[in-house]
Image 1 (cartoon, rainbow, N blue to C red):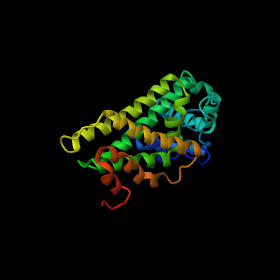
Image 2 (cartoon, rainbow, N blue to C red):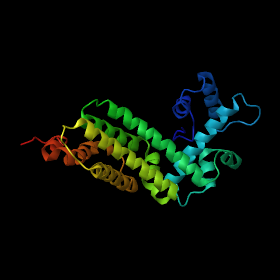
Image 3 (cartoon, rainbow, N blue to C red):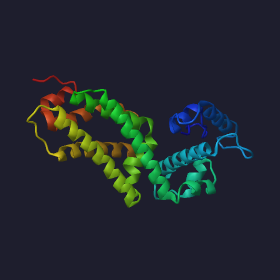
Image 4 (tube, one colour):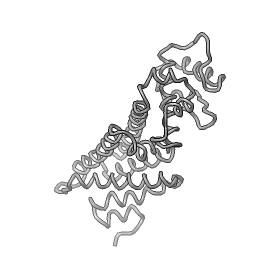
Length: 253
């Protein structure tokens, strides 16, 4: 929700974070207030509903957590690091979250839902063609990681080092995507094609491992270019080498 430029918040960023549940005039007022006060709500009487102010402050804290964890790592991050990046007070933090772990899990859940939604939308554009669905989903994943590296790092890298609850959320997210792949394989590939659900888990695990390495090395600029290779890796166990080679632009012989 917060732009990379001096922690500034625009109307567009507010709408992206909060959706369309609030009237446009209130969102515009919030953006103007934050813009006029270095992205902090000014003191004194408020012209916004308390629920909207709280919703915005919560989103700011989630962004603050993303930034702190990306810069410092989960283990080195503390509440002070989060509130400094969010531009809110310590009492405001504890109005929303009981501790650092609580905020981290909320940020993880928000990012994970956004990722699931984007991948589902892109995959659905592939209709009933299995490879088109996979290609769309992988493309959305790579676009998400390139556009939101802090969110990608939280889910793929930092969740491994966080609490057991965070580790379980990460595993559940991977299992979710593996189940999606396995379900579509069984639905859309020719009748009689049989594969273990472990195959889909292996595909998802391999993709996650690649992203983990890229995020740790800071090699994010060329992520979309990885799509053909990811498609080869995904198609190979289901349709064989010749079909997989088509994804790399190689002629079948």
